[in-house]
View 1: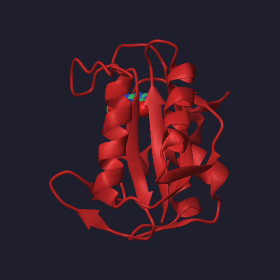
View 2: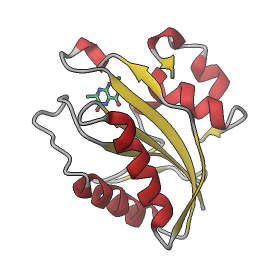
View 3: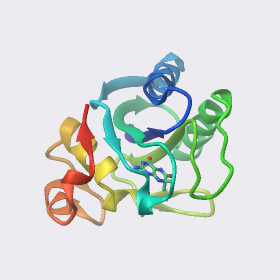
View 4: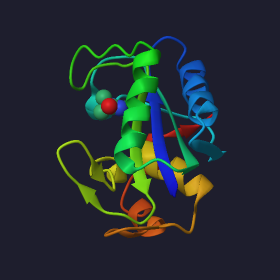
Length: 157
Ligand code: ROI
């Protein structure tokens, strides 16, 4: 299965945190990293005080079910000692499953396509970089989603 994961960090050397998470996704026997976007810098969403974020999106091929992939993402977050003081607070690393094949999933632990991410420049812009022709389940072509947001919210590094 092809899947797309959004990565974000604004603490403890964010670029290194993202690199490490990408390496972990690739080191796993059940997943292979196919491609990763450039790094993008943005202010914290909603102007919540804190350091700027670095974000990226990657494409993986995986044998894992969606829920096992979520468990893997959470393991990687735990390994990198994610600190998460507040719901909207700063974090060392955050991994969100954006898309899992063309599946639509909605249960207690998982909502795919990721319901908030798909409105965020720091997700759409890097996703567009690696997959400009992708069509999101329920939502349509990425290009029409991009038209509705402010691409200036993120800066390519
Ligand atoms: N803001 C930005 N710019 N990037 C993120 O990855 C990010 N992640 C979050 C919240 C706290 C919503 N803000 C963010 O979880």
